[in-house]
Image 1 (cartoon, rainbow, N blue to C red):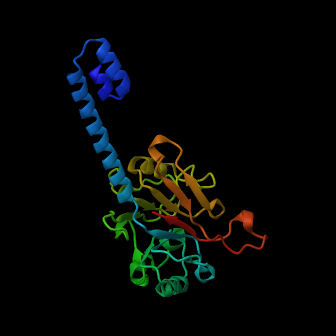
Image 2: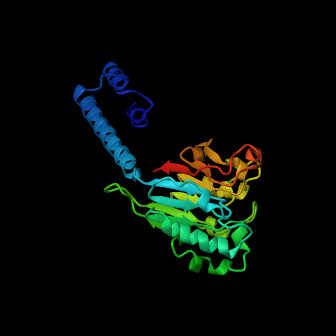
Image 3: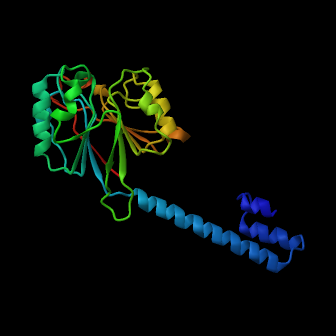
Length: 264
């Protein structure tokens, strides 16, 4: 009976009633109840601290696929800008240079950028970090963003190099579960704001890593937000932050999708 109480299979009231009927001494029952209450109190305090610690008071402004039209985007205020790639149109270096200048004009404290397919094969691709002097360029690397809330942990953002769906991507496989809070990959994970063409292998890694946020783009018409739908992803939010208009918005007076804002 005591093991059932410890496992949570029986309420305190039923435990006491069954114990009295079985002839267990009241002092022994009282001691067990006190220990159980102390355990529950400790668990509640730990859960409360974990929730408080996760509230970093950071506002993330999410962009992708601006394709040289970055100056046409209305960028909301916030603490961190994350751009998920394709900031140029067909890898034009003048787009990259002006994108960097534009970033320098924005007031956000932290600016994180990964490449998309338009930059991956540009002639200047290996010099991307030198061009983006007003951003932290992530290529299979982690950026640590300090929280604004006292005592809250920093935000750990992992940005990938560009890879096509179903390509094995070794750096993702090396990330332990729980090691990062945000994954930024230009192409979306399969089944989540991906227009039906996302990467199954990326989804496999996200299920293992379990970040709280996945930021992507690439599939313009899939712009939006989705929540994880299984146990491994129940705390993960997927964002397709593509700003370029998708096929279903062309000809309707819309030049671009808006930025997406997420508070963490």
